[in-house]
Image (tube, rainbow, N blue to C red; front, top):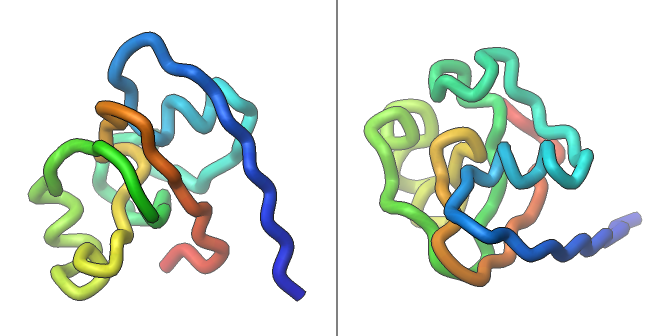
Length: 91
């Protein structure tokens, strides 16, 4: 069974996906507290304007996952309208 929840919000300034999720009471695993060290806060950017890939993301996710839209919520800043998918299995 697949269930899809959509929650939309307006953000006044650029923030990380993790910060926006916290503002909306959406829980995303982040054992390193958003420092880009653990790689557990994986999300998928399905569309939108977000920041460039960071070195931490390259090291923790690899080029193949990044090419498919996977990003770290703590490292990715939303710069404009975007759609973000929560990933169930964080590795």
